[in-house]
Length: 514
Image (cartoon, rainbow, N blue to C red; front, side):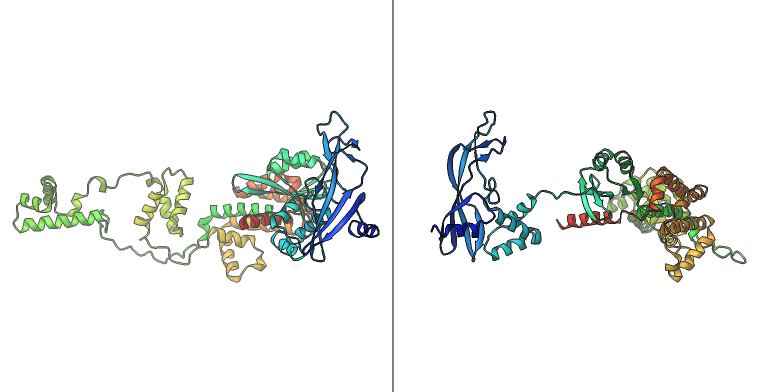
């Protein structure tokens, strides 16, 4: 046995110092190795004071890598030392064998590192199945705990960083994701989207040279305070998206120009006179019931029945019967609630009639439009007016006019990419409305500036847009002036926030899968 021990020490624990193998016992499924530590002393884990005074010893049984398909269990005798520092709160401590054990560890370091490698490669379930194949039974949660216990790798300070928000709970809780644009890897997550938090993070990393962001005020302020030396680049996609929103508002403001002007007739034809219609709504259940009672009362009177007899037969009061008998027509009973009383909708009915003739047949859309004009009531009154009064009116003769969103899409699309039918419709719309023609010209010049990275033309474009008779486009241009340096850099530099948006979308996908 004396000649075998050095070979076992070299074979089993060649990388571990101060360890002696006492014996090896091989059973059917388990290999038990008895060993003890040989170090002269150990350092206290609390105060770091070296101690060689032994207080006692005990056995530890950490599991090791399997050998020849058999489980290896190490029976290791370790000593407990007395801390010689009187002020140390730890009176005794147990020695650890470097490269073999750690505090509260139930596995050797080499088995732990092997399981961590399996977990990093295959994650939980697949890693547990592979570990079981080479003789180490471990749960998927244990593998995940080993992975989470690893320290975060040191991340170098990025030169180009992208900043954007992501929703932990949409509409309520938001955080900030920071991505290294050059390596396309996430760098850090911030718990909120406040300017102070971003400024503090940037101030700790003075090596940042370029910051890609959207036009949010809190990110602009945080980047300016935290990294004044960095160049801020506004994302081009957000610029184009904001321009598209402004363009849609402009088109909607001129929606009356979307319908082509009807051809005038040579001689106006007189409209046939329509017979006067009853003010009582046809098909209404109360109207039909009153008409039926009126006809029944006059039929019984013509048959010779007395008024009291008719009242008893029909279950009516004598006063109600007298009113019905005196009325020659049912329309004479139209009093009280059946008369046309003034409502809050009366002032908006001409506008509703005009929009109906323009082709807008959505009651909810009509209610939203008059709500912006000051209508105080809810949607139900508008829906009832549309159902009773507008549904029967004839629609204008001719094709349905394009929607404001469709016209906006045509203007924002490159002319070579438009279908022939869309191109002809857009040409007719622009010929019918000079304001929309001017809007299309401004958008195309901005698109050329964006795609060709000609940010030096931005001041001239802003000056031209602010003088146009397009309020939404003017507001967009004035907002660009507030962040002129970042927008100019975004229209000049090749950097953008596309990789950041990709990680935000990946976060959304992971949230949907949870």
